[in-house]
Amino acid sequence: MSATVPGSVANHHYFDRDLDCKAVKLLPSEYYVTTDDIALTTVLGSCVAACVVDLDAGVAGMNHFMLPEDGEPGTRGQVESMRYGAYAMEVLIGEMLRAGARRDRLQAKVFGGAAVLANMTTLNIGDRNADFVLRYLKTERISVAAQDLRGQHARRVCLLPKSGKAVVRKLRTQVDVQSIQREEGELLRRLSAVNKNTGMV
Image (tube, rainbow, N blue to C red):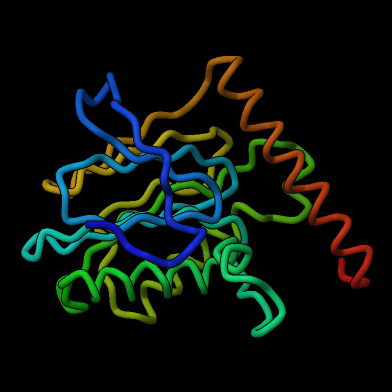
């Protein structure tokens, strides 16, 4: 069973040879909630992914958000709002509860928030994302079972829902690093354009 917020539910299903199982790959601004024995995977630079499980209910979910701040209410579409941590966390937890999870049993593992481009450090996006997700989970009283945040390396994260185990691999190969750097460069350009238009620094 998967969650049903239109447009932002990950839909890239594939067979993961490394994990030897079916998997769903999450892209930025997506999430996925499942009760099936299917791996959830994503690749992170400055973005953060929260992996949340209720092992007793057999419900697990993951999101992938790009920025810590919430979108302004009423000014953004649902998919674009998933870029923002506050909305992405709210949707993920809400869909997990609808799938049968209980808030008092939720456990989280959080990853990402790296500074993979030198000029990303001026905006501190990775640090801000990492700070946000830890603050959010503390406020919501959801325990953090594991974390691998900040640093300079991109990460590939795999969540195995049935066990709640998360596998993290730092990406160091040229192809992986260049791919993430392109994505981060595009994010940086978009943020710079937004900041210019709004007068923000």
